[in-house]
Image 1 (cartoon, one colour):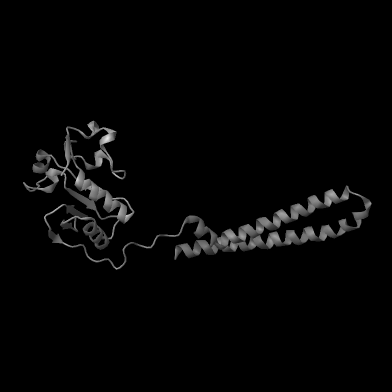
Image 2: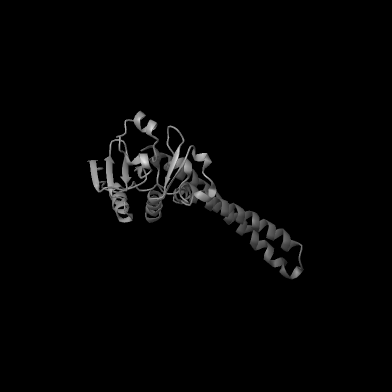
Length: 224
């Protein structure tokens, strides 16, 4: 088992660190900043991160002897040799996490459901604590993106229709002015554009009314 000790994680040269999803500060002792790099353990931690495809929140990794005593750790804790990690379960399904950890080679498991983390280490094979309760669903359904919610809002739809109608009316007036300045061959078309403009204006007024009603209805639905 290859290991390297540093009095502080800031002393670790870049060339000595090869675990892309973790940093020396994450693995260092929380109480002293000291760091013991256990390559075999970190290789398995990185393999677990790669298998799960999502961040691992490391609550505790290496512990110096003095910090281990301060937190009430056992005298032969695997944390003392950098071979153990306490990982938060906030963003993981504990069942899937445990299965993946076993697959990459972790052998020791401690379950701390009340504190929200799982201990994994290189062994020997053993386990303690009470497993996390099985979740009916791994995670809550993610809420729709704001733009998707807005797309379903009748207020937005009504407002969009009003905007289109208003722009249409303005566009007809522009076209009418342009045509009035062109050759006399197309002048007979100009009178027909005026009624078309009024059609767009009427549509805009109707859409505005719909928008006002929809805004009230959207608000009412949100208050229920």
